[in-house]
Amino acid sequence: MDEKKLLEATLGFLVRDGKVWLAIKTRNIGRDHWNGYGGGVEPEDKNLIECLKRETQEECKVEIKGETAEKVAVIDFHNTKSDGEIFVCKVHIFLVKDWEGVPQESEEMATPTNFKIDNLPFEQMMPADKEWLPLVLEGKKLIAEYYYGPFQKELIKERKIEQIEKFPEEHSGEFRMH
Image (cartoon, rainbow, N blue to C red; front, side):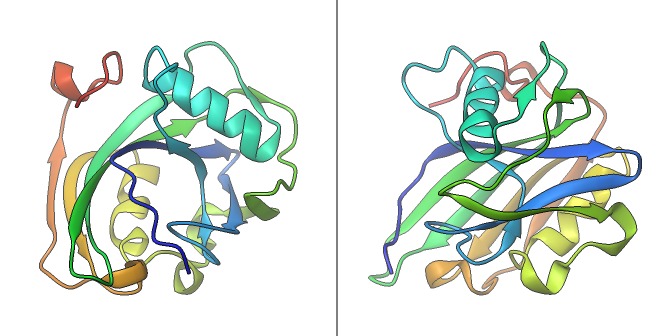
């Protein structure tokens, strides 16, 4: 199994009428787990919203309308590779309530499914998701850190999580952080 080293990414959850769309990742970090849509920030992305829009279009053929994605979390995932190397991926997480289209299956994301927010398949999601995802779906904003072992199979250290009122400018999504 490949171990992708990703340093900055977006992750969006399509939410409407008390339900959220998830799909099963088919490769890289999160493979074989239910997840939202997103991926790595590319040099051509002008900002994080543009990255989220591009990734969502590629992964599920849905078009996010305007600048309607709401930033709800910034999580630093500390990932330990099987060779012991550690890299941190800063993931900017958004809730998306205004989009066009119905999520479709793609090469990267299989079986798009609409789940009730109070009945998410946490046992088939990434281990940290059951802690932070319910909070952001309740409307809270977070800055957090999680520490994963090889292949993101288990959490290996105490997590850090802080609820905030508003993101500092460097976490707003307007400018990329490197």
